[in-house]
Length: 238
Image 1 (cartoon, rainbow, N blue to C red):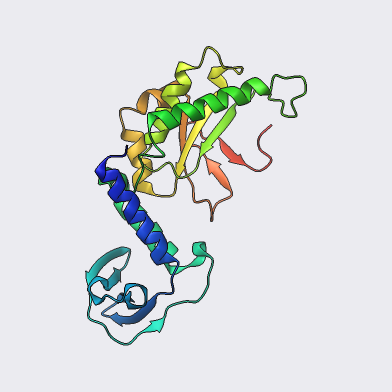
Image 2 (cartoon, helix red, strand yellow):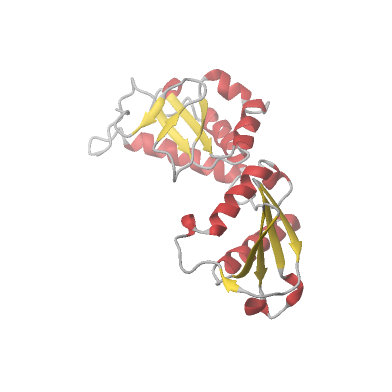
């Protein structure tokens, strides 16, 4: 059973996903260098009470209630990664950083718990075992590093649980444990700095098992690892 806080977080995410799928009616105006986006949800639920204003001043975003006014469509059908909602989402994660999860704003229990981390570690163990089969189409060079990359590591909870589970399996892995390199990535500077200072992750950084990189999946095509300085890009791996 999930904790009440986790259930509330899941419901919040469910509401956001539904809301993102409808056409937003937004009244936009600029006042003293600030950009105001007025979101009218009447067409969604018929209730004026939950209409709100998203106010941007530079890189900062604030949300307040607003009175209904003239409306027009902000944008038509766009790829989510090219929409205004996407930019607002990136700004949110960049500003809130690890607090997005610490304050239970973003659900994470189902994806960052010890059980699922152990399951992924066992999957890796099975994959490495399968590469040893004579009929395997995947052959690994044990003299070269095996990079495991996590995109969007957030606060690093899954990373910690996975590395702990993987370390427990190190004696039964069909690959040199010292050549396994786990790389956690995220686009938000605040998350990156949080990892480097976190005492639970420091032993893994120190041992060489863990490395990190700032990476935006939509805007970058290479990874520069923070600890080793290695650049990972297409064609650089053997």
